[in-house]
Amino acid sequence: MTWCLLVCSLPACATVLQRPLTGPCVEPDPQVWLAKAAKSLVFAAFSPRGPIYDQHRRQAVPVGIGPVDPLAQAVISYPFPQRFAGGDAGFIDLKRRSFVYDDALAVVWLAASGDLARAQGLCFALRALQLPDGAWGFSFAAQDDGFYNAGYVRAGTVAWVVYAFARYQQASGDRQFVDTLERGLLWLQGQTDARGLVRAGRGRWIDGDTFDPDFDAHFSATEHQIDIWFAYAAAGQADPDLAARLQLPAASAKLLAALDAHLWLDGSERYAQGIDADARDDTSALDAAGTWAALLDLARAKPARAKAALAWVQRHHAVQVGGWQGLRPYMPDPPATWFVEGSLALALGWWRLGEQQTARQAFAPAIQLACAGEVPLVYAPDWNVDFPLSPAAAPTLWFLLTGSELHGGKALVWTERAH
Image (tube, rainbow, N blue to C red; front, side, top):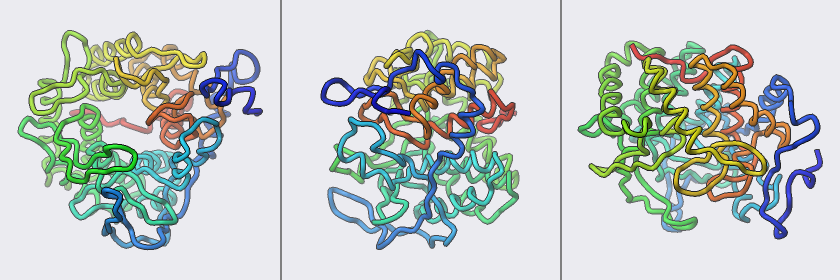
């Protein structure tokens, strides 16, 4: 593939991956590109050199982590940061960075697809990275300098790690991570407010150089609540005794009741982005408003609400970038780009509603994108802050999980159901 035919270079124009109108990428074979995507993920041994540290106010602050097993691995989140022109110079530094959410997502994929040895290697790394209070930071250097952004903690990331350990344990029967799973669940429960919603966590980046570790992220994001419900449900399936001891069924029920009471918007037929104290943020976030939220509502037998949420994001989040039809991450806020990772669950939602043709139509642009831009799948078709035109693990993993269900008949993620 000749990249100069697909990407215009700076400074003549903004860098955009263009949708092909002719050639093999117009109607690519999904099975071919799913197979290529599975082989495109990049893993590395987790072997930090030197002391583990976090960057607080430009000062190196030591961070204590557990022993690192010799078999520990990590998925590289942005393995080829220079494939497309136009990225910020600092973006190249991410070539050895692994985001904890990506590792959790990779565990889910690997465990479901039968690669239990590699899934276990990722679990070894995640166990070592668990913080003393049971939470996890946001990203880390898989190798080299020992960086771990341990001060930036978000409930959604913690929930995905909990979900990953539960799915690995259920698939493998390996119970060596039960204590890690339990500590993660206890942290999530400890973040629950009086309404039953889970607070976001702690820490924030003020800008690209300055980090505030003392920031209390006491707001509750709808996206996190969805993650947490599935984490509780997966833990319950993997370890019923643990679920009973931690009263996870009651916590799940309280969480769903709080979502309905405080975050569902009747007039719009969608969820708000979140709530801080009593100030609700009615911004429409793609995952919270429709794609991930629809999967939750299907899990609790609310198909009409799920269908309304999917229709909402298709009406209000639709965007065209470089000829691609996609969904933007927020409304009305920028950026106006196709958020590839967040859009893939749209296809899963329609598929689980029985709308198979609609689902495959929603998934088809991702297959074209994989073919036109190669794999790993890019995060977005143009360069934006937080949404880079770069091959990335997260959209590739969602591509695999979604494609396995639509084109392979295997439902691999968020298959849990409310009882």
